[in-house]
Length: 436
Image 1 (cartoon, one colour):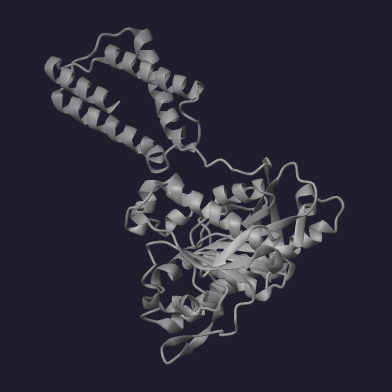
Image 2: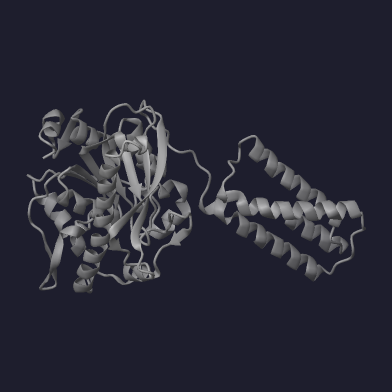
């Protein structure tokens, strides 16, 4: 398209003509080519191409009208030709931005034997007023499940919490991998703390601006007192959200008319996963709820363990963490955990040989590439993280899938063997002991 516009500007400059007929034929061919690529499956139709498709439709109609009228091309000034070409090129670039920022890609196929099904629900908490809602409405969450479609029996439940600006599908490749191997995965949108979600009426609910301002201004090194207040606020909301999901699933199980996914859940074998702020919330639930046996924290501080501030330092809950934790870090934080006050407890576990908290550093990963965002938007991932991942996003996600599956197979199913600081953990013995 851009090359064509340049050619038309050059030829139009020489002939002082808009080349209406030739340009119309070009637009019709471009639209036909785009439609053919969609039809044969080279281009997978999605939101990425909606604006481009609309633009091509407008240009197609205009071109068809011009050709049917058959009017000769009117003379045009060279200045108008150049400005017109630049305007159309800029417009084309703008409508292509979604496809540039979110390029088409192939999802990582699950490796398990179970086909994966999905289900959505909305859970409301009658006991909580949503702190972000102006109308005093009750807290409500959209929750999505991934589960074995051919499921027969009870499967361990994995509950996921997305990052500070994320969405429930943050690590969808990991959910599908776990579900294909016999797990039920539930991921809520933390309403107003996620980029967007939809309510029970299907209306889009965007992230709360006040919450965004809190994130932007928070600095644990400069003002730990303010950070401690915000951490307690954020963790209070998120931990309650995750506990709501657990409680609602338990209630649904007691209803014989409820959807099949609830009856597939074994609530005595629960694992938690979270990324960043969501990982902190997952760690908070792991300390509070007895049915939780294991937590996979993707680059997350023990934020829920922060009790206050004394002498400019955070005061942490020093009671041993009650369940197994797998902390996964990227290049973004590995090697500088001691420099971040909110990660002080993570550093303590690194030095504690007796702690059941293996620490894994994925070399070449960045903070956001620990999520599917590294694959869905490589450009934005690089820009937000401030660096280029040292290995392809798909390889990072495959490593996370393998780690997560092996970790939960050991801690929730008693399958295989898990290495903790070079020592082998008997998974069968560990799972039989309730994951503790």
